[in-house]
Image (cartoon, rainbow, N blue to C red):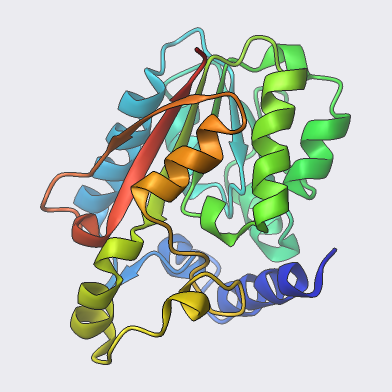
Length: 238
């Protein structure tokens, strides 16, 4: 594992352990300035993912970078279940303790790329989501993840990459949420900063289409607490 990945995992592990074991939203840093986001915001996330994936009862979901499973479980309720994968030990511990219902809803501690390259269940999955975490992957790992999904997962026709930081909106975000000017672009594209890599839609399009996927961008409703500075990407096969 690269040093930057170890740093990301350490941040989420330490951050999650600093909150109560049932404060699921704060554990995964899903917080507005006023505190953890409320139920109406969670409903927007769940509906947004379900719409982007066109989720149906017969789908089997793979959630990459699932965190503590609090959002994953809500999507599992809308389909046949599936698997959530994350490399942060404490978050998977929370997911197993609170949301796992084997064999239909399972959470596994693993590096997402390693899981994709080695799982013997590849044919089982029909939909894939990576919400609020794709930006925390190394560029090479993000690319390999998308390539491996095409190569090893024959029944996956739709992938949803959610809550991606919009580089074009970084100045507004930092002024509004942090009260400072945005860092230089090279810093915003480094995993050394919390929050991951900021990209424009065009940069995301280039990355995704280079891996053989088609992409359509969307945004959450204006009422969503970070709708103004985030976008979602729905990937489909040509």
